[in-house]
Image (cartoon, rainbow, N blue to C red; front, side, top):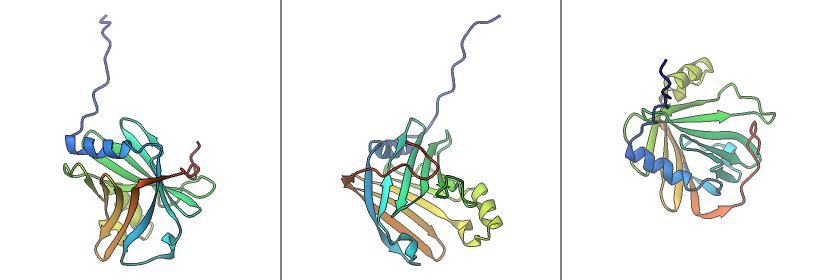
Amino acid sequence: MNSRQISAAPLVSIPTQDAFFASIRAHCGKAYEGKVVIDNQPSPAFDARLVMHVRRCNDAQLQIPFHVGNNASRTWILTKTGSGMNLKHDHRHADGSHDAVTMYGGHTLDAGYDQIQSFPVDEYSKQMFAQEGLAQSLTNIWQMYIYEDVFTYRLVREGREFRVDFDLTQPITPPAAPWGYED
């Protein structure tokens, strides 16, 4: 019998995505207020105070709740996959149960940049959007930008652009855990 211990394979990634991930991770535990700067189809759903909280961080995943006023239903989950980076949107109800439209998102297709990564809609999300009657979302592309003084979340698709900028120069008191999560 061979008693050699087998170690786990390393999580491979590329420098631009590592730099992007590390820049966000450097804000772990901190929260920031944001504002809608582009919304070509305005919705009252984003008229309240906007807060992002870089809440949980490890070498492979960042969990970033996005609070809209008292609505704590949204958490962005960035995960290194070994073939790029994945963005998922975890949507919950106030009781913690998952919304019918949850865990949608996309995966990087290229190296991106140290400050910018794009996440074109993935196949799971396309199937869910079609099933839920959200055909307009089948071409979604989510983007995140991280610079020294601003973090940006952006959604684009044909006929739609939505962008929120968060001021990284003014940390605020972190909010309570998002719905379905515990402190």
